[in-house]
Length: 415
Image (cartoon, rainbow, N blue to C red; front, top):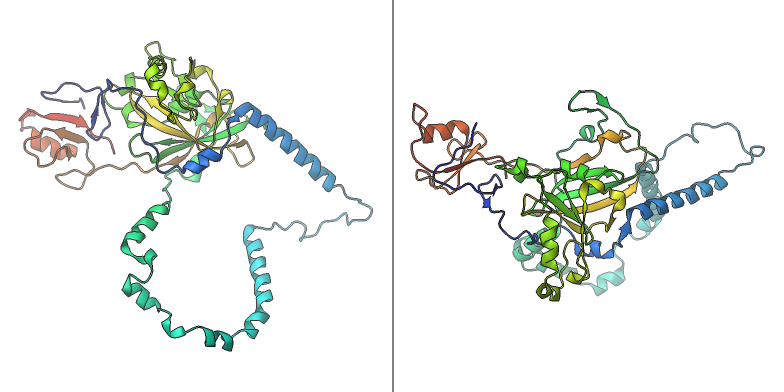
């Protein structure tokens, strides 16, 4: 259905919730600090060169294999050449924990029998009448500071809540990848010395993790960018605006695949070269030394692979698109590929995490999800107002399909 507006100037971008953003806003404004990422994690992680990391890991694995081979060299003349069932038994984590519990119970059984009652020395020293009961602690509220209402709220904020993942294992490890044009199945083997990297995408406003992907280090950065989802890429002129960049360790990686793409980094480099800004020392996209180390140029995103990067794990880097829509991206894991990974090279990038996408219900019927959001709507009590398609048409059009009055309306997608 075509987009309708009345008496309004077309905005540059709409986030789907009615908040209209102008791309004339300074592209150099960075998103606020992500409260969900602990600072000490990024500070303790060294700067890693991806190629050097793979070579070092391969050397370590080679030394481990040599050590294991030397350890497992057995004299067949003195050992039993046959295996029995106990040799083939697989010990799981539960078996180890159960054996440790049984061993600890056997060790403490004698001590429990010996000290099954309170020693007389303790009875003479401690006045048990002054020890509060559980009921008095729960009803009093002031006996322990940690149980007060204020501290309960503070303690709850310190406990990180588990984010629900809407990606199932069957979706994560599916090997079936088809060509979008021909429909034929695509298949490719992954080298045994390939690195896999896990990267997370954060929401531009709430700074909560929205997606997480597993990529091969030999892939181009554009392959990651093509699978990152943001609502601004699908509203208004978002599908026609493909410009964007990654800012990783003081270097820009701009997407210049399309002839009409803009290189945002040129203006940003000029802005950071301004003498007035050099006095500030800020943590900008992983640059710890401030603005004195200004990048002199940018690389093309389609020509750079993850092997060309230098990065820190759990450090916040910037992904910018649609002019001023900025996300944090965080590399959370880097390792060699193993037998548990998907062995189809065409399946990568693999989405390993997807946050729940929330949609508002219609403000009239409160049953169906909203499809339209209106502004300056004189017959509604809320600003903005949300409608499903049925309620929207009954309220704003007559029986002949003519608009009853003027207002601003946009398609609503999700929060």
